[in-house]
Length: 464
Image (tube, rainbow, N blue to C red; front, side, top):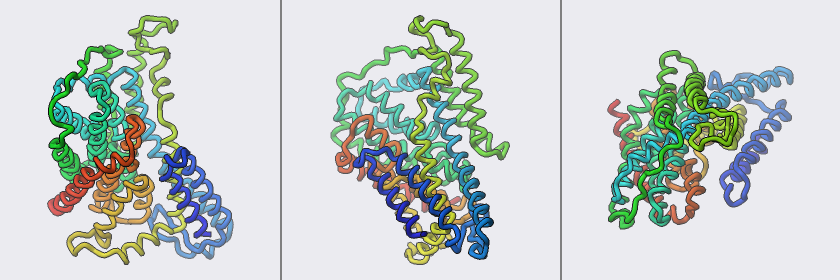
């Protein structure tokens, strides 16, 4: 039965990886895989001899001696435990996505356009690289990529030049997301899973992540495509749609940034702080919206309601629910493998057979090579299930350097292929970037940045 469950998982995983070839949204195989895995566990419960207790992070003794009712009760408790942990991540992401959509509702990101006044190709590259790096740490790498590509489309009209910028925005956004607990889904998972803390994440990963962005951008700045100036850079003559755009931008970003502080003070799960931030931002959004509210939709074009009586309702309708359902499916499917002790067994065999890179360069039995391969793997397949699996595989304590290395590798490794990260996939969709063009032009830059950052991490961990 375990073999069948693993086979279902592998087939589902393959369908997710080949999403573009099969023309099937990845949320569908993720949900089907999750449901079938748990159904097979329920049907074959009496045949399993081991069970993994996620709370204690160890295999249960004498599981095979329990009767059917006891096993069913244990399975239901485990399922509820994993659903609760998954829901923490999903509710957190829902809150963050809604705040970003509220900012966009008031055209808050138009404020960022005012930063770009130069016509120099090289300066525009550096401006967008730094914007992507720091913005992704605040509003997550996926959203930062969408915002910056939207701005870039208004500044650079030549698509052949623009896709070079987009490629390096993906690299910079993924690097920026790695050192912030709210910058990337995988880092958020490690933070909510009590594997890393905000302070240590910044201390360990800021310099490696910065180098991961700086080195590819520096090399790229010498390429012919970034030499000279643009003949015409569109001036930002369009006024923001709302007079509250700047206020909502700073309020929204401030709300998201306050979440780690709220968690540190109250020790409550991050989603509680995110819901508070969303509530505060929503109050101001409603107040600002109501200040120009009209019963008729045929009103002045400057009205803030934009054809909708509530900015919160309008923002909620724009949230990318397919992503939320994909995370639900993939995290719960990985939980099924974890519950049967399959991941625990795999981790044990991996640590026994994988060669060490030296006595100083390994984490209590876990090779650096394993973590680097996880980074390379996240470029080929989605980094969310890889990190979800690592949470079930390794039992190191909070803020162990292993977790920080995993956060770095999974966060930045995806830049090596355009399908390797959410930021890359959305860039591919927005600019119709060819997989092989990215492979030839950008992948080597991303690889150099990834390796330089990894070496930097190996040095920084010995200092702190």
